[in-house]
Amino acid sequence: MDVNPTFLPPISNYLIHPRALPPICDWAVDDRPREKLLQKGPAALSHAELLAILIHSGNRELSAVSLAQSILLGCGNDLSELGRLGLYELSRFAGIGEAKAATIMAAMELGRRRQTAALSSNRTVLYNSADAAALLKPLLEDQPCETFYAVYLNHANKVLGHSCISTGGRTSTTVDPRLVFEAALLHKATRILLCHNHPSGNLRPSHADVTMTLRLKEAGKLLDIDVIDHVIVADTGYFSLREDGMM
Image (cartoon, rainbow, N blue to C red; front, side, top):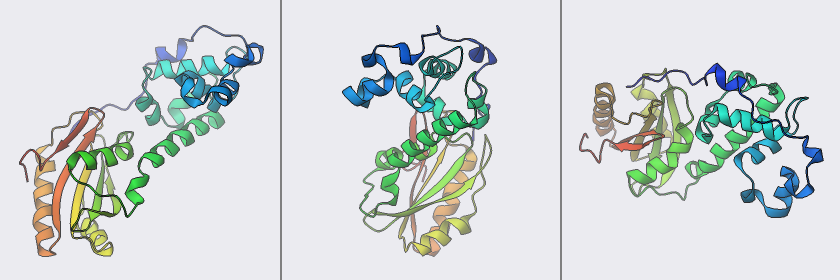
């Protein structure tokens, strides 16, 4: 598996403030983020304006929009990086306390849950590895550590359920085959799709990834449960062991 340092923007990012703007209450009504959203819809707002609505208020030096710009600057204007920030990282930004940090984290989590709602639907069918990657990427891409999931399917590849099997460190996670197949039996699954993330973005499977996959596939034969694929996801895309002929 692969190595990725803990995401923590350089301290210089926290010391660089965007140009201080006048208080939002002094802006023209059409330019205020909340009023702009109500009049034109959320799609008309910039990332900073949407984030400013979550932040709600600025401090003595910066407006909510300026605070939002500071956070986005520290994340390289990358919303995926913003989604990985926890309470400690967010609270390091000037003007962001626990309440504002909690609001941002809650909004990012709601976005993730919306994207992964299909995992809880008994109408979702996986036709190929790309479908599996698209379904699971929102669940895994913001995880700072390697996290391993199993998705349980029937003979027609309809999703019956999913389970988080393990969460490890930056470079690996341990998978207990008993947990994988215990949940499969509870879901009455006939097929299993395995999936985990590589936080560093390197999609190539390690030797341990391949060995573990083949071990689970052999174990599944004893229960007449087919392990059909193992998909690795990252910001850069996905890798399918089945498509690459590794299983």
